[in-house]
Image (cartoon, rainbow, N blue to C red):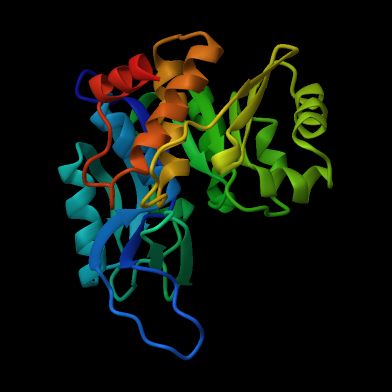
Amino acid sequence: MPENEKKFDVTGIGPAVVDDLIILPDFPAQDTRVEALQRRKQAGGSVPMALKTLAKLGASTSIIGKIGDDEDSGLIKKQLQHSGIDVTSLIGEKGAKSPYAQVWININNGTRTIAVDSGSAPVLRERNLDFNALPHCKILHLEGKEHDLAEKLIHTYRLKGTKISIDTGRFRATTPKLLDLADIIIMPLKFALDWVGKYNFMELISRIGYKYPGKLVIITDGRMGSICSYRGEIIRQKAFRVNCVDSTGAGGVYAGGVLYGALNDWEIPETLEFAAAAAALNCVKIGNDSLPGLEDIRDFLGAV
């Protein structure tokens, strides 16, 4: 590696979104009016949230992706950079708008209703990248969306000795073929159900774990916690009970916790517990401006 090449703990590839949070005293009935308690905009998306979490924990991170050149895109870049993420490889596209999501949050229980406007969201293309000058990293973390580039990027990073992590997101028919190339697979329960079939938690992880015996495979289900398969062992991790006021971004925070454990070569049970605690602490405050730090998570685990 050239002396001047940047080296990071984790590099992420995935879309960045503007989350426009609307905090409500309760969800309104159809065709009624309700006064918002609070409103704020923030940079979101599963990969950016994982990177923001890792940066808060002290890991070095960078992001590869595309944004637009509108006001919201400027907010994304500014917030990610402020969070400690290297945005050198975050490419702006003239005339494009970054994805926007309006998130209605019920302050009573943290549940959400989300309306997404993908608009003219820019797509990362092979021509946008110099594959000889990609940031070096220990772990490459991808969302299961950038399929046009994902396979080539994974092979490129494998030649660098990089571990590959995939957060699948929602089910896409092209995603499963990428899982063969990953070391760490994180999938929501709905993805597993859509992919494997209508089985319970244990049957799903058994079937997927049998298919990928050497990989760390995790199925997540919010308040139900997570279940993991690794080298023939199945491990269940409960979700910690907290006063949830905003669950936006919790999945990305959980992934960040898993990657932090992987960076530090922790045992799997310790990693899952740490990730669950990080996600829980993310839910007790509105927005992601105050992500939990290492001491916050340790103190929380020491008290439960």
